[in-house]
Length: 167
Image (cartoon, rainbow, N blue to C red):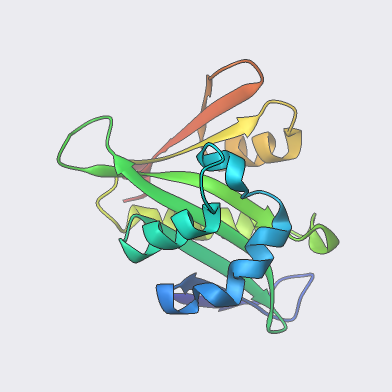
């Protein structure tokens, strides 16, 4: 799935669904983002290997944004068992990253809108995500896009979006 658009900040950008065969193209960008590290799987093994394995088993989707043929953003969706039914699934948005040099240009919002559109075309019931309660720009964006806020633990907030509202 590829979407190409223009916006006020760039002549064009492209959002692409990254297949397993293209993982090596984004691996260094993901590693350099600092979001995915060995601690996120309990310090055992290489987290990128785990991500690659989930992508291979169709348990994850990675989307990237190119601007002028350069990767500037990625997101990772994990499929998970639905809280509503054992026979269906939901999506969990584990990561949304936009390179620091181009933040505040609405690419994160474009990515989230793309992900909502993608997920609403699947059989999933919802998208969930966690955010640090001090990440106010992200929290405002999630609220703007219709995510419902729930307290999670300590300094994290849990957000859910009912995908049936988009069908």
